Length: 160
Image (tube, rainbow, N blue to C red; front, side, top):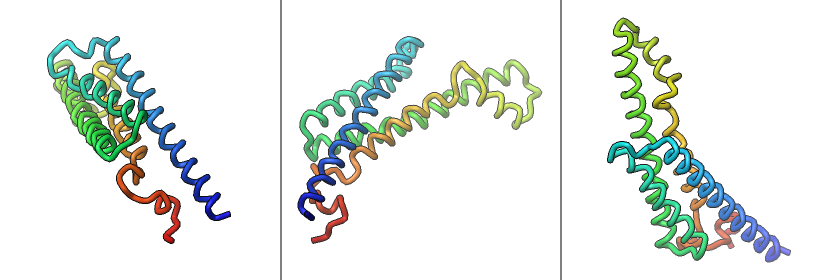
């Protein structure tokens, strides 16, 4: 009975891990499509998130095809890169919106400016946060991944 329980738990974790990577892929494809439709490549530096997303897409597909420690680590590095790029993107969007708003109305208080910038639609200040969410999802999907050499039994709490 205990062996069957461990097998079911291991299969369930494997399925959940694959589903999380599938959600990651779905999010990448949706966000990538949106960025291309918004022409988020007008300047060279605007291509960086698209390149990171394309590399992450390839890494996720190779991880799904055949997991190995090297592939898990490559995927994690790219997921962490997405998190960093999301934070940088939020900062860049915020600064760009802030400069625009100050040009429009230099008499705004800091509080007024902050809230006005957060509500702007172009560039959307919080939109790069989607990269942060995708990166975190990728890290969750590879948490204690069995390809990293940990025994599957330690994943389900069996210390025997």
